[in-house]
Length: 199
Ligand code: SAM
Image (cartoon, rainbow, N blue to C red; front, side):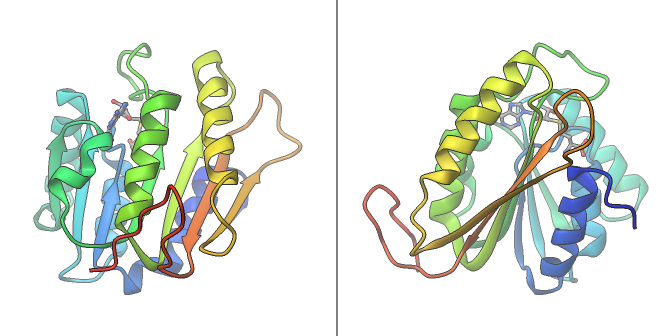
């Protein structure tokens, strides 16, 4: 595999974790390519929640998974990822965000820094020990740059005693290439501002 971008890197990372994962969240379903990747590489019995605020995205994702016979693992949710805790009651192993707008859709309907940080905060609370959150952010356009700054600020503030946090970006590509953020929960300790659910 060529290491030529954040999307390739995140898929490699997910491949390492999917064999152990039972509860998986695709926070931004879009056209369903990432949901299909998760469904294809997860074990039988894994459950995937796929969120998007656009009906067209949910329709496209459902169709892609139906076409590939991976439909039965996935619950599609037409709602903001900020509300993921309303739909998911237990702990999750993986939450993945691919930020931005729906490819082929309206570029003005996009993830935003404020709601993404809210959703990250919900994800942190649902995350199981050894679970991971991945975020691919796109600083190459104005809204995406602002959002990337907010994501960077948020994940950088997570306590080192509870989380491993890192990021990855191509350094020799033009136009501010996408950034991959990785958050791994290493223990279930509750720290100020980051209530952790360990039920
Ligand atoms: N994972 C997708 C794929 O494989 O095709 C690509 C995701 S696309 C870059 C970003 C998606 O996030 C868009 O479809 C957009 O509608 C969705 N989105 C924007 N704000 C959202 C929110 N608050 N909650 C959930 N999805 C949101």
